[in-house]
Length: 278
Image (cartoon, rainbow, N blue to C red; front, side):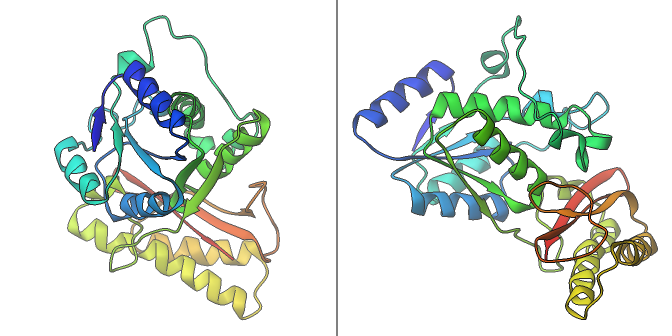
């Protein structure tokens, strides 16, 4: 497994790989890897001949009062896990290499970035699309794998692929959960034991909504009220609960096939996201 720490070195490795006509896969991460990340790595490993995992805590997707400085990091452990997954290269660029002092260009999905998480994090997805496009340009993957927990991110990346005429296949991997149902996230480490226990209500409430849909409930407002009640009973502070179409992310008044129920909730200072697709 090669560890690559500069953009120029990564580009040289990509050129060499392309000469051998090997398909390239990319799994972009911010590190502090867990089983959810590794599930994406395994999907990519089956789909390509040369697999690159990037580790970069991207500063441009953090707001001024968010947890950039505190975001968990353990590169040594990450590398140990990736070796076991037979990753071919790990790209760990420096911030000054990705964003030089005079950097002045951004990429933004105008409408999709303003919905769901974009309401309370208005600059987040601009940072995501900018860094992902940079990674695509550097690594030149044939496929890239993202997780369904960040459903809105995957929708936006797919939109960017279409709008900017990129020849990259986007694959999404299922949400991986802890035994109690909590979606795996690097930020789960911030939770106290009681908060972690209470946070399992997110998946429980979403499953309840799916069961209601299967019983014939279609009123989105009724489902949102039920979700709100269940989550606030467990001391969750709701950022949003939205019922939307899975492709457009626009609100739906009635539940139907391809409806996405997405939410963001604070437990203490920790903001967690989760979703379920009907």
